[in-house]
Length: 536
Ligand code: FAD
Image (cartoon, rainbow, N blue to C red; front, side, top):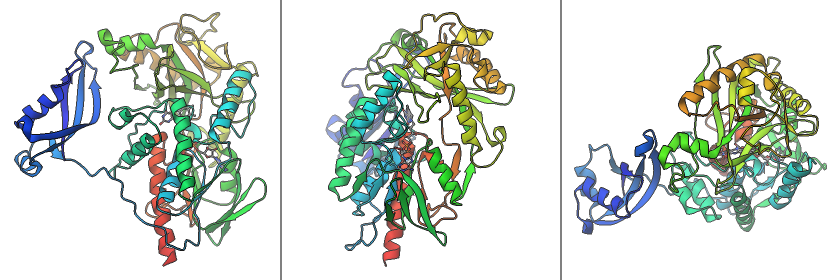
């Protein structure tokens, strides 16, 4: 196959335009073009009145080799990379040890799936419930304020990304094309085909729920085992080698290959890991608020007269501002046409995040607006970041009225440092509810100062961003893990505990669904190779 990149066509191009562009670039006839696939479709909306679609295409011709030689110097023409996934190992016929995967978020899910596909029959231990039961608990909390600390937005089958916008893009380097493997598995499990070619694929909450169930069924069909309501409370370590786990009910399981993919909110498990002497380090993360605007305003600001175009969909944005006080403020986990959700997993704490459905057709756009912080802001050892998060989340709970409503403020009032008396045009989407207050007390002063400087700066990029009636809701603290469970670069094992494979977002090796899933594949491969090496 030949890959053609940066093929630019008008937004309203007709059905034949792609084929014509191929023929004209390569100066070949229609008979020489056997077929083509759209590998990626993005857009350039810098000129709102002249938005162009940008295609990457994989094509088959009657003579690929000659064309590749003829165009060897052309920047838009290359041989297509191999997109197939090639398993690195196969389980021995007599498998003496089954690997354990702790956590069934995107990282644990892909780790378990790839291990199962290679014949290793993994045992997955997940503290939360299976996804349908978990959905009831999560929506129950949003509607009735009844929190289940083991089954919520953070914990349960599918992990933290299940009730989300389901954005599937990532900026991690991916020379082995693992992201393609992830997307293919998602499509096999029921995700829309378009995730394979749009530049910013997303799935949305309800589709994710059904997909996770199908992937679980495949793991089980391949001999894997998935156990819900199984919180790992202890790790067994003998002479620097992990040998097993103890579950919350006291049951013990043995394995010398254990992936720990527990996400960024398993604070009790982080403490246990630290107490066992497994090497962890405090790491930077970010804190801030969720901002909401009417989606129609964002569409207009980004796409001008093309707002509402079906191909473009609901507009997103990505913003960053470097402040005078040395801090950086940036938008994070932007959810077009979505809702702000209550994302705590601990009692008497308030945490915000965002989600949407595949259609992205809710009234508001939301995004976190966060400030980068690092361990010098929360000195006190590897776990100090967790205490810092807890303090902010507890304060938000009090500011919201101590009933899981979130504290909120209109942007105009925030910039003027006053408590708003009423909401404006932007209706809050946060469930269970919000309480208007002055958010200046919700974060450290340097964060407030930075966000106050950043919002007007963002307004220069997206007209209306600093609209008086836009709404801030807080606090956004679970942007990434506050710790790193440090692992060896080559073996992927913990640097001081053999056989323990720290993985995904909770270990500090991913940030988002796609990067966590990719990390799961890497971990599965490392575990499989190690099991085979020890079996020989
Ligand atoms: P997690 O998904 O957090 O999974 C960890 C799992 O481990 C959990 O299921 C947990 O119950 C389990 N676990 C924890 N401790 C134990 C224990 N001791 N024993 C057994 N099991 C345990 N990212 C995107 O890329 N796009 C988005 O649109 C997006 N939207 C989001 C919206 C929301 C509301 C949230 C909360 C997150 C969102 N994210 C999004 C972030 C994304 O979900 C995470 O980056 C991703 O889920 C991390 O994957 P993971 O597998 O490493 O960890």
